[in-house]
Amino acid sequence: MAKGIEIREAHFPGRAPIDAYGNGGFRFADMSHRGSILCMPSGIHGWDKDESTPLMLADLQRVLDEAGDIEVLLVGTGKEIRPLSADIKAALRERNIRSDPMSTGAAVRTFNVMLAESRAVAAALIAV
Image (cartoon, rainbow, N blue to C red):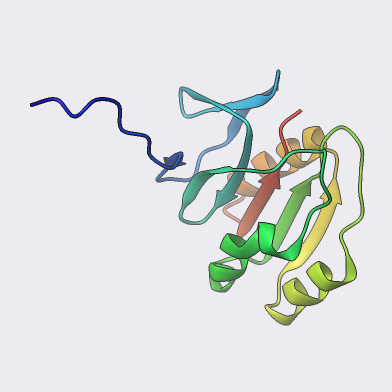
């Protein structure tokens, strides 16, 4: 018997370059996602974050949980570059993760290059 619509957490279980961004979302792996995303070693995850609120350490918990597989975190902060707070930088540094905040467009382009080079890269991308 049909249960109806099942809502699940957005997750693509692989690593894929970002084919396009804009209009509030991203295209990758012949799919599209509306909203922000975390591109992690475990896959691409939907991320409940937008430009209207400051980035907090708790927003990056998944990054901290997968820190052993990440050397560089690219943070696409939206249309404008916004610096990371001292507590975020310290938590990432403690886990030997270099961080680089930039506009989302620049982060997408850099992520794609580093992914193609098989680097241990992750990206937190706020939709624009």
